[in-house]
Image 1 (spheres, rainbow, N blue to C red):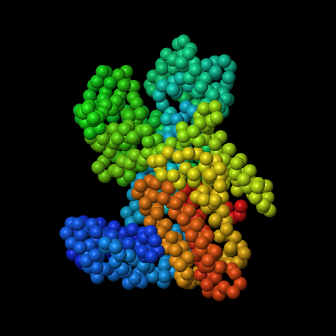
Image 2: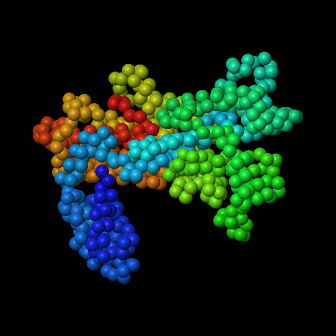
Length: 580
């Protein structure tokens, strides 16, 4: 059910009948106030400029050709030429009942499903995951879930960093530990951060160690069996750490989704040969460089995109070009979405321009760099520990769960300790995720424990609690929500507002998917929960004296609210609970 799409189709037909230009935008929007109807068709203003006509007269012509008798009870012209659409309560009632009886809440699958490659999370396997990986991981995962819910085929790609000089450094350090008598199969890599720090200190300070590390990189890239064995041991340990974080974070990435940098190693020489053969890459100071006039600076100097170092080594640039080829030409992707820090903007512009020139990206493939802002501390600087160190993501999640448990302990409850522990886990993880996802993807935001764990306002705990309140109605009523199939009557304004919001889920998901912005779903769920609270106060459900038909009608609305909250939160990777 997508009311906006229905109105767009009807508006286009009406505009053709009214003689408006074919390229006129119907400009169908949700109304901001009930007195202006439920939706508006704003095409007349844009068309009037092109046709040099009176917009109100054009609006009347549109209305004269507009067939909305099946869904609208009234249309009217307002202001300079807005067309207000007031939907029929009967239409809303029938649509709510249909949505309640549908497994996917009447959300249709895409008419033309696409294959979408989504590149997200992508931690550096030399270290443990830290808070800097949170946004890519959870934003990407929410978009993946929404795409699959709408029927697209999604290929998850976890482009993990597992190659380069740093791994030569780590292999050299690991080898030295083993040479001191530690067994290769049992060497302790439990604290990756400490292991990396110790290796880096040796790389910076110890004579000969840096040369040894660089030598090991060359051997690793050349397929040396000894180096590869040590490398694989380190990578396996690091991947295990990442998988533990994904599981706790309720993220859908698995080991099967890993397509790390090293996966493209065999193709990199061919990529360079292709760029040279097409005169896209040229030698400059011994390196292979692509000069991009399209990204020239204010002085007219072309943007230099290095694809191979002077010593013959490859870079992120080379690997990303190979990834373009794999995703577009081999997988046949219609869309490629990449969730990476906003500071990578220039790099991915260079990648796309180069890949398109070289044919590594088909014209039919949309390449979408989806940047995100930074999680900031109270000091308005990137979030750090009190001592200024990097915050491990596993530690952040553990602290959130502990804080949630303390909050829940302040509330009266007859739940068992194990139930309270499970609820604390869901609330703690949900709070971190919603606090991040509810901000616009490109915005920086201030991390604040008190606001994110609050049971008031736009937070995960508030939405989780709203869900439990709806479920409690069914426990009190004794009605089985799964078999509820009553007719719905939309009479009170609060019922209409709630019904209309419930029927706008598909519109919200379309916007979320097209712009890769989970915050629109977060906002929708908060608005829905708030409207439900208003409805519940104004429209008694189980109160003595309420007619059975009215009670059952309102129970259908309640059930659809709970299912929509549960579905929406699940698309954000946030779990609900029956009680809290």
